[in-house]
Amino acid sequence: MSLNNILNSLPEDLKSQLFERLLEILLKSKNVDKADPTHVVRFLYLAREGLLKSSECLKSMLYIATSMEKEETLSILSERVEFSKLRDAISG
Amino acid sequence: MVKFGIEFVPREVYWRTVYYTVESEKSGFNYVWITDHYNNRNVYVILTLIANYTNSIKLGTGVTNPYVCNPVFTATAIASLAEVAPDRVVCGIGAGDYVTLSTIGLKFEKPLAYVREAVEVIRTLTSGGTVDLDGQAFKIKGAKLNYKSPSKIPVYIGAQGPAMLKLAGEIGDGVLINASHPKDLKEAVARIREGVSKANRKIEDLDVAAYTSFSIAEEEAKAVEAAIPVVAFIVGGSPNIVLERHGIDLEKAQAIKDALVQGKFGRAFKNVTSEMVEAFSIAGTPKQCIDKIEQVLATGVTQFVVGSPIGPDVIKSIRMIGERVIPVF
Image (cartoon, rainbow over all chains, first blue to last red; front, side, top):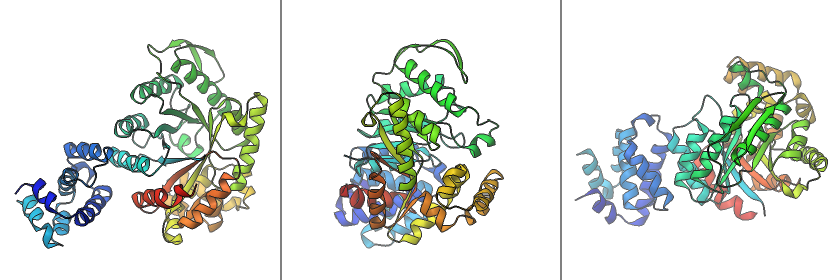
């Protein structure tokens, strides 16, 4: 199952929760030099378009967060059973 | 109707400042002001990226400096930015602060001449004209850009002292008053009016902006704690006349100035008193901030700029202002 499909299957409240947790990593991590530039540009583009909580944006945020703080991102994805497929997809 | 601006110091990687601005635009802010200091990311690079990822928010240097940056360069940079975002660009310019200038070996001399002449150069060049200037600050012979700005670029003058405020009233399209307290703003607006009268203009011709040090949080203590470093730098750059107006102990203020010049920031921050925070920032809960903004607007201010630090958590503070402060006005 692709990341997009997994994210699409999440209910909106869980998408919001995931967005806030990933945003915290994006804005507070000290490893800014590790942020994936391609996904950073995609994230900003989707933010401009008002699509911050879309599956596509969450996917980019997941990639950025993983590149900056892999262990913390995986830990967030371990907090809820609904995120387990995301964790498997990211860690695999 | 009052306008709301927000200031960002681009000390973080570019995309965070861009994202903060995207959120600010969605939260109802009308202007973003990006500071221009040699030790942070370049203001024009950041503003260009912001232009690319936003739709309507106005983009300003907050503020650029004629000692550090020759106004010919400022003109070409700001006109190029206006090509990216026509009708959205404004140029904030000010004489700067003693601490930063001394760090890079520049003398704070003839500030009125530097700012007046820089404004003339920027206006002439961005509108397609040729500059021949034998000034006190700049000697320019036949300078002309190979293009011109597609739209008029309003020039805002950053000011705090009485003479600079008068100059802003005389020649500025706007003025960015470096103050947060109604007492200072009332005094500033009076000086601006003197300049306006001298030039036979109307105060309504100017956008009078209070460029505040602002910090908002659910808990007052957290908001105040976040404001302390910024207040230290304001105290460090404030003339004695302003410090005395608020009953600030000049010896304590000098101790902060000395510590900042020596780069001993922790010592400077420890010397910040609650009186200094009250005088030089708006820091508190949403309700407390709304009350203080109302007092600020009563002085004749037409734009309220939420300046650094914004709050202990920038993104939460931006949302808080968008949801609970801006709608009140």
